[in-house]
Length: 452
Image (cartoon, rainbow, N blue to C red; front, side, top):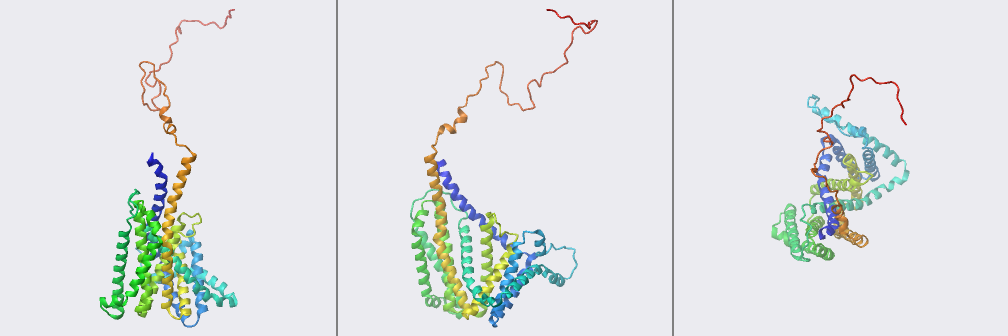
């Protein structure tokens, strides 16, 4: 009886964790779609346009650069919204290559960019609309640069959801455990994060100034103090949630994993801010980091949108239109970085501001994700209690089928058989035509005599 009572709570709880596990599996398929050779010209185009428009922004043409970024973003957004049509997808994807084709490679490469014509046509329409706004377009650089905060929050939330799905993989059974005993796991997590951060600090210092490992650690002791302070802040903010999760093994394992992975990302973003401020990486390193951050942000944002809208009736983002929607987001993100670089006079400040926003987003999500998981369990418990109070549990209903009387077979010689429908009654009897007696030598009268 106890197992039946616990079923609703465990079912709802496992459903939530299973959902996170399924979302984790969709990331690889999304990467395969975004990096497909059939759509590779779109990726080449975004890198080319991003470099040209970024150069225009730094050369003093901020308005023209902002119009270009927004137009390209709008063009790919329209393409993504129309990608549900098979013909539209055929215009924006290369056909399967025929192995017997003898066309030169350079000609195939040149003609492969024809799949970019439709998004560019939509972008030209968007550009005409923006240029028709008159003096209002002068405010576009400020608007686009202010969106950088939104993109940073989207990056943090999308990657946080990915980490929560990663934390839900291969959890133990949902069985009770002794409450508490979370100090050891916390100390181990803190030490592991500090060791990994220390290795990166030594590596970054060596690449920048060729210093030894001991000197690098001593010069960055303030960073380690801030990292420990952020870990203790997270430990204090989640103390009640950790105690609540320690009652069950699966929730405890999920909480330990989620807090470790999220705090690891908090420390990474803190280290990036510290590196830009104290270690001062070179220009090529900054450009490479900006490029990787843009690709990573686009990937995480599109993964978050596809996983969230998987069960949505609107289906605005799916695997069919993930690439054009991702490119639209990529153009908008690159435009925000370019505009903010002009406003803050240095891309380093832009990178630092973005990492601070993502860091704060992760710290906000740490207790929020745990509350979302535990809220499901509490709702299931409340529903179970209400059902038990309103609907009395009766064993007679469950045994009703067993108490029904069966008709006795009193006739002797009659046995119950499990014959099929084809074995009907009398199937073994040989039927013959009835014999009519006195059919020969009998004269029948045509008159019928009625007797009283």
